[in-house]
Length: 160
Picture 1: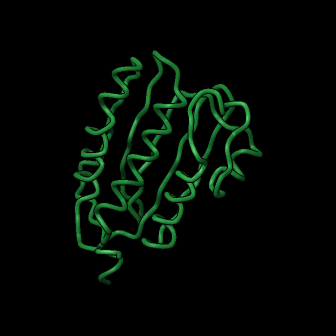
Picture 2: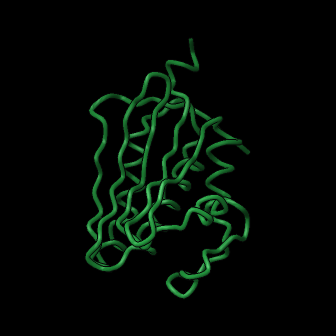
């Protein structure tokens, strides 16, 4: 059951950051937040969106080597609120970028690095696109890291 309410995206992202701080510290990964000073209001299912943010952060921590960094960023564009998870991890090939949101897809070369079912990013895509009417995209470079970007309708646009 989806239970949407008006909420602060930055508060939700700060909570996700707090959840992922201990695993990041355990791997000596610098986990930082870079949040917009503006109030970013969204109409969202809090638990689902929180789960999506935690999933993206968890993947970033899993696929970033010790000494690397993960940044959770938020901002407002003309008509949307955007949050990004950027890491200095192993990165994805162009082919993997095309397939990474498919159910059960696992990047071959990184299977040894982190266990998983290949369902996490498919679930995040469902939460963002089907439940919240947003978009998810990835930009990545092998050996340099990845940025997962989520764009959601902002509350002001929904009420207009």
